[in-house]
Image (cartoon, rainbow, N blue to C red; front, side, top):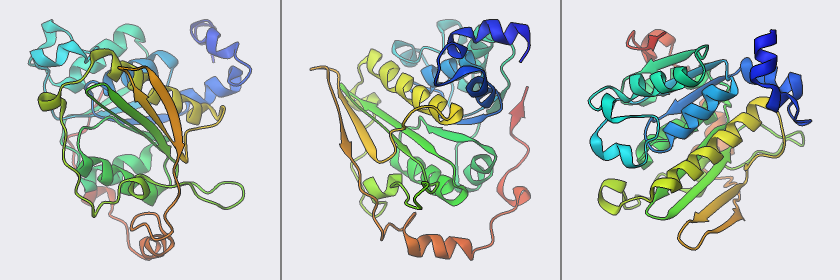
Length: 277
C-alpha cells in the first residue's frame, strides 16, 4: 500500500478486525456482482469505495426513469445507458482507481461458471429465482462464497451461502437448501408489487458488509443464518438455516457427481463480450 492508500482507507485500517492486512486482502480480492439495479447499486458503490481490487458487474439492462426511485448508482442524465456503464461511472467518481469489468449480458450457466471461477466472492443482486439458483450452483461447484439479498415491498432478506468447509469439516447450507430448485415459487417483481426505496439500500449495504468481511477475513458471516427485515415495523431478526444432506446442489451425492464431471473450458463457457476498462 502506498501513502495515498493508507490515507484513503485509514478508517478501515484503524479497525482492529481489518487493519493493514485486512485492507490488503480486500485490495487483492475480486468481487462478482450480479445485477446493477436496486441492490447492485449500493453494493457496487461500497465495494469501489472500500478498495476492492477488481469488481465485475453483470447486467444486460439499461437505465430507465422508473429505476431512479431506488437505484442510486444511476442518474436521469444516464437514462438509456447500459446499467453496467452507468454504475461504473458512478464507482469511478468515488474511487478513480477502481478496476471495473463490465459484462453487459444476461447471465447464463456457462457465463457464470467462468466468472465465478475467477472470483473471491459473488454477490447476488439479481431479481429472479432461476438466476439465483444458477449462480448458487456455480458457487458451490467452485467453492466461492455467495452473498445473497432480496427486497420486495417492505420486506428484505440477506444471507451468506459459503460452500467452503469449516475447520471442523462441516459445510454451511447453500441457497438450494433454503429454496429447493424443484419448488417453483411465485415470482414477485417490484414492477408489479412495488418496493420501498431505502429498503434496497439497507439490503445492499448489508450485502456489501458481508462481502467485505469475507474478503478481509473479519468477524462472523451470515453463513447458516438468514437475516430478515420488515422495514414497515422496523423489525430485524435472524433465523437458523440447516444444511440439507440430500440437497441436489450441495449434498454429498451432488458433490460426488460434480467432482467426476469434466468442467467447461473457458473457451466453451464465455465469449469476448466481457468489457474491461
